[in-house]
Image (cartoon, rainbow, N blue to C red; front, side, top):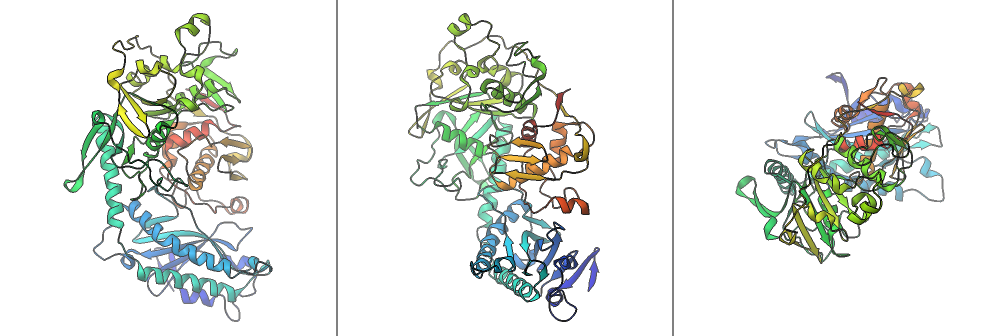
Length: 576
């Protein structure tokens, strides 16, 4: 046994010996599993195995980390220039093998007996076609570290079953050893190329005044699942007016449709594919693996869908850009309601999005409040006291004064044609540029200037939650719950996985545990940079008894954290 960098390094043979023979953990109380934590166990080929306690009430449930030396998987000359892509590649290679081993453990259980309470079990993270930073896999110190959750075998309900523990660990080590010996880096160069292309395209768009790009040949429509391109779908083809060629590394290039900053209106008939294109544009906030169909769909990373959301909380928000004073007997510069209407909720989503730093708003007529989108001249004449200021009256201010762009899908409202910089017509999933058909006389009304929210604060929470929360949960992939604080995040369509939902819950815990008032945007930017790290906030022993940490996390954006906090019921927000 040696000590390296304050970490105890043992041999895996020594770990297995802990469960066999006189004086071992075999037959001991399940709290004995604490004794195998805090050390790393080295296999003969350099693979490291380590355990971490995640809940003292259930000591048989451990976080298990498998660490693979880079030299075991790749040539010595291989350099990990960008760990995100390499981590993603290793995860996709290792996950199916571990899943197969996990399934073999389940098949060994007699469903008519209680053995499922005693045998080992492994829980694996999920992943999709996006290339993201994930807590499940990290490259650090020359090792690829895969994080799992395991339940160690017991004898009955309270005693350690040494024989089954040895069998469980031997099977796991043999499985990962066989995988490492067969590991091939084939396909990594292609994924790395696609990932680097995405970043080059994103930088090109920002430098040349574009907000989104869809490469020719992309398959945006999805099949039975979000991860599969629709079979037989029409590959995307750019209209000539919007077609550009972007230079890439190695003398290559990519051609496709680039949408300029400003106002882009997408129109078309029912089932023509216009909403599918908008969904595809949103998906471009993250890179995708080769074969997904959306590898070359790239969108400004701050893009945000701004839809109507009946019943959402609006927490002391300045909605004066879209509502006149004395609306519902409240001051519109500090408006509160726990059940907003469609127009109020959509206006709030836009105001919060701009505060959070969004430079691209995505709006769909089908999911919007009609009375918020537009008011024609007759309605204005008949009802001049309507408190709602429609989105048409602010859209040019957003682009010219706030620096944001808008992509809006309409099928029955022509009012936005007057404000469009680009007009696209979608027919049977084919896109045409019809900007030349816009009215010769465009809307040139003077752009008014509104008081957009510059800073937002969250007041400190009271009582025990200043130290920690007794319960931090996610529910049905839509609700985040911290004791009596709750937020419905189903409308946040950029949150597309359970792991991202876990990240939001972790971010909420970190923010609401603060003991002082804090500026929301600054806190969100600080937290999201560390959210996928293993030890975002060390837990005390007492907290481990209350809150299980058996979660994986995925990269999220500061804008998602801000939108989540804005929906959190039970807290108090305020403007500067």
